[in-house]
Length: 320
Image 1 (cartoon, rainbow, N blue to C red):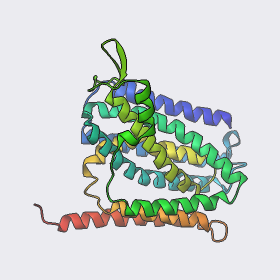
Image 2: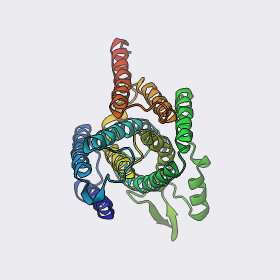
Image 3: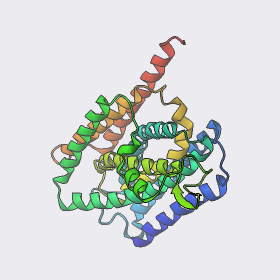
Image 4: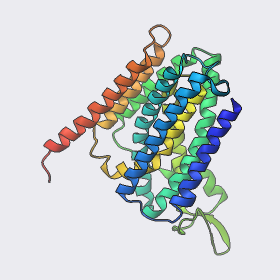
């Protein structure tokens, strides 16, 4: 079991190193076409890993699935992985909108945005791994925690519904306050660097502040999204791997969709209903369990309605 976890983590590190060290070694603007191709690549890779999940749980490679909660077969595990992946991927769309606001606020040059997202996602993977393990332990030890998570998701859905616009207030971010007490902040960017030296004084650049804000906002999104996948399964390996693959494609998805997010104006409403549904599912999980395939269909339908409504409204609104 430890070997399986170690192998997966090594695989992800290799993919990340190839991404930044080989394919995106130079700081350059990523075109929409390239971003779409990379998005397709990460989606295909995620689906291939779903096949690995199927065979791993069918044949119990290295003991995987033998003691997992609610996993009956390889097919069941693969379905839970895919459902979790869809949930995490859809919720990441709101994260993309916030990232776009952060980059716009700090006026980060396009050619440096990929580098910031790379390190931001690497940090997010570590933090989410810790949060997933903690959440798994809590749910397995205290069954009533599932109701707490469900209620929290309902509150999050309400908050997302009433919040109309995303605002960035760096001075209120606790990480930014701490950094400013330790390091001076340079007045401008120093290329791709997070740290610089001005007048023989070590200072952080605005690019580093952007990284910190993205990391801190991802923690808030993880608090929303991780409980959501616990409504599908409490198997830590499925929860972690589906989260990881959803996050890995976040950078390319950002560059592919950031400019078009305003077009999908009703997609956020769909995400509200997704969170609300998952919250209700968690609350009634013991008394009225909903099959995973039904949840997948409901979530897919909600997202489809949001996307199609946005396209139809966009088409019917006359151009200015």
